[in-house]
Length: 406
Image (tube, rainbow, N blue to C red):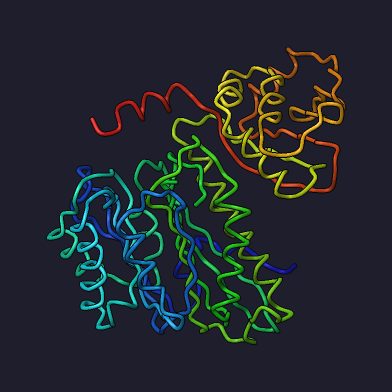
């Protein structure tokens, strides 16, 4: 497939999108804490949200704005530093107020605005500062504002996460761009994780939603930092049709291309989240194959990825593959010990249920010398496969989260 990354790509790489990011004193650090993403024309929109039963007010309000079958979207407003979650009726009122003030500043209907928040739970928003920030962000909107927006959505992240790529649809060049945030509280079923994606491709709403679900399953829902699912997780995808080319519907021959490229972008952004895991010293890819189904493979991969014992062993560069085997065995999937094979990197540890002698010192050295490592788990049952990305669990992670609000 022909596609390429766009240098310094972001949400404003597709035609017709503007963005900005400003500091309005939600964060005590003085860093940027309010982002605005705007399309010059109405967009069809797709979204996925947290499955946590405790949902933040902006999640509920954005769902409300997307509910009408023919809902169109022009803007996304995001604040960081405050999750606006567990804030009662006032939280809902404030989330709607963010949409209303953004609509007023842009001279568009409030229901064409989506809203997201991230930060500490249980505190009401400083609405006077947010309203001021929205007005400021509106004045600063530009085609070069994607990086500012990427900075403004960060909380515990150590770096902004922004990517875009271009590809051909029916002879016309189109683009997809995105920004994301997340470093801790990451175990998406849809964690404190936000992603905002834009495209100028002519994609119909049903096709856009299906492509997003497919991509999210194989990216943001296939990463794990600490096994904690947040209340605010949101992914928005806007398509404004400004890139030309044929219309992409579910039965279009171009749909698989669009879906595949979108998945590539989402996987890149999601892997940046894992690389930025709070206190992480290793980026870990867990490749599961030979499962009865892809669903089983995914269940095994996520169980291993979320195992505290596996993650601490990796932090200590300890080739304790028995912890991996134990995690595999408790996954909600079909597993037979007599067909199970485990590799740590290229080092075979267990072969069809039989332990394989190996030089533990060499494996320890390999783990110690490499930041990017991989585990291969072959269930030896069928053709199902899945990959999940995670990181180790370090002393720094414990220290950081022990002192998060104090």
